[in-house]
Length: 257
Image (cartoon, rainbow, N blue to C red):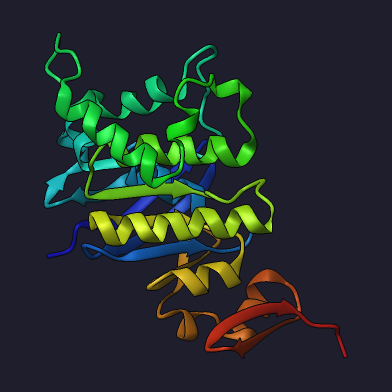
């Protein structure tokens, strides 16, 4: 059974069509990257899957109609990390990550020992234990990115949606962030869906790629199938080569001959 299914999903803003009849399905345990040129609809699709957009068509998570779920029910099924999450001023790392447990508490309930234990485990896995009492605004970009991921993982949801999780990170921190996501996915059996600009990184970490163009799915499948140089050159209006180095795909610009 597919964990997440979108059927003929459309999004319009004013007279503009942002998504046009998009149908995708995500299986449990998959790592799926949504790629495409600017304005292709990547972030809109991800936010639609998170239930944050008014859409036509249908979206279901774990067999449940997304539109019929309460915010608490949605938060128990999926965690969403936008490109630029709001940072509560003065809040410590421990308190911020603990917010991920909120969907699992009763209406007037307080966090219990089980919730604290989950957060401590996540902080340790993401190498944040020593930063627990630091306020968020004192952290570096890479540390803050790990905090957002920690809060999402602490929700203990079957699916995590990440919008450009490596934005503004340097090469080393990009690799560290994606390696952490891969390890957490394997250890916690989490399904990962993320948007990415970097086609090389998307190909190296993803099981499957969904290539968007003009609000539609242009191609989807194994990275080697989707990242066709002719297709990419056309969609990105660029000259592109796809190389294979050490068993991995590398997408590079090519000089026009």
